[in-house]
Image 1 (cartoon, rainbow, N blue to C red):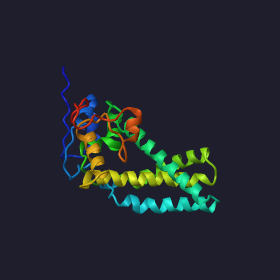
Image 2 (tube, rainbow, N blue to C red):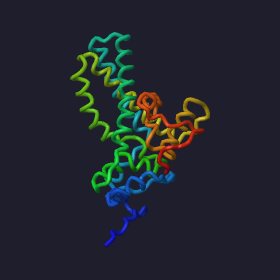
Image 3 (cartoon, rainbow, N blue to C red):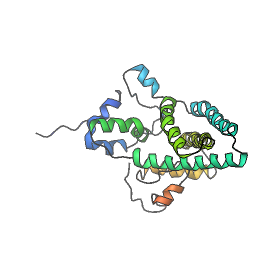
Length: 240
């Protein structure tokens, strides 16, 4: 007997459906639906509410936290030149984390039920519905949980006075990333570099999903060989 191919019903909550796609999930999730109205994820209203985040929640919640950690490093004796250096290093480290997460975690290939489900929640939903404005930035509760191991890792590697500034710089990099990401999808930039960044990121969504993982810049794509061909070149990636 030949197993019947599973079909996702877009009119029903999606999260617990997509796992049934199996190996077909990879192809399905990279065929975007460009509607500004996002799908329903869960039947439960509370769970559904937790998946939606307005973009301005990110700077509103996290910029005061950035200022707190920067002030903490000043309080612990860091000079202004040292402070600026540590913040800069933190921002640079974030850009590498941004690239690495996007390339190696967000674009991992899955085929089992729970792996497909987890991937859809983490990033697949964004590729399937790239214009869903309430699921473009990272939910603050989830971000807060992830901040703990990142801070503890920095604490192991840095001094007592530099740890807060490094963490604050990285967190500021994250805020810039999430706000930039939202703008690239919903803004209409008319001048570079924003116009080129938007074109670069839309190319990742609609033409070559296997390249162009940088959001705030293409530097790490260039370093690690994932820079997509120019718009005038021949596309070698997976079409969606």
